[in-house]
Image 1 (cartoon, rainbow, N blue to C red):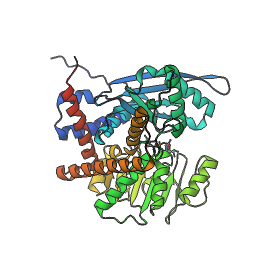
Image 2 (spheres, rainbow, N blue to C red):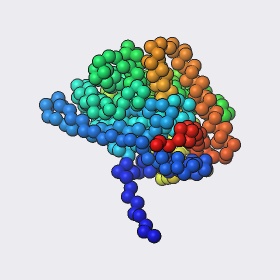
Image 3 (cartoon, protein in one colour):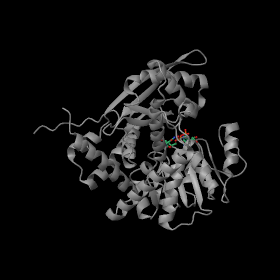
Image 4 (tube, rainbow, N blue to C red):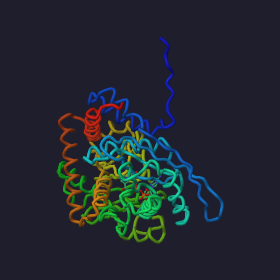
Length: 424
Ligand code: NAD
């Protein structure tokens, strides 16, 4: 028999392979239908676009952009837009797949998507960012829509970028379409509580983990890699809850103080100086060292692949709570598990962001807006119930929390896919 040589697709990069490995481990445990399996390891559709931008020096720079849908079985696909130099097709495809499992796990009627542009937003002017965002929106317009695919902020993007995105889409339609983007400013239909939602969600699950592990939260020490939307709000909320935030970092450097850092003061310093480098209230620490300091909770909240086979044995924390997407390599998972480190996986831990994005989308469709109390109560309910479901499966099947979370998410979509059948 002639053996066919398997050619790997363009998106099969190490990070995509990592998402597939995680999926396959859970699919094996679930004894997943092989036909469904085949459909889950590939993105549903992927678009690559060129985004030409007239820069402030009048030269034209062409950026590479992407939008990927991994799944839309349960409803529109949903996922953030990332502006970072590392963005490539493989990264966007992996992030889209994780979005699918995350939405299913917390019970949202969305599939997974992701988008991004390979660029460095920290060196671009407001004017350049606006032009790039508007042109990117126009380039991917055939792939998005409030019932098709809804965007949100991710690394390197924020509510201003979402406002430009929503405005551009609305200009094409001729009327305001707030439900095309979530994480928008409140003045154009954003939801109260969306900005801090991911951090708030992280805090809900950390408190659940404390309860389960019988840890008293008072003065517990926390180290956080990344001080952007997720890292900062998590740090602020834990600081306000009485925890000691002993280490934080951004792309350039980190800070350490065993007695606890002054989080509001660091935030004020960053507003003036862009980065935390030079802040006087702590000792300098590198991003690598931050991962290995003694603490109760370690929160990677920046980029992927930070906890690896190489450093997993040196972590000195009781809990790892993944704010970032994909911060732990699959080889590191069994090491953490054997060492008794309690892992709250990304698809569970950072799902507060997409949950409040869902609330925002619903409010936009209904033109009926909720109060902060309602948003937080509902978010708390979703996060606590997802945590309990994952923990229960993890204990009953004797698997780690990542495996349990993926099993729950994958199983839910599989059932829906089987019920819908295969077209044609
Ligand atoms: P952000 O752009 O607001 O902040 C990113 C932070 O990470 C910044 O402090 C930046 O300086 C730092 N950083 C960037 N590159 C780094 C590097 N190489 N090493 C160390 N630090 C680095 O981004 P964000 O929205 O906070 O997203 C952070 C992570 O959380 C991403 O993995 C993202 O996918 C994930 N996430 C975000 C949301 C959300 O609602 N924003 C929701 C779920 C998951």
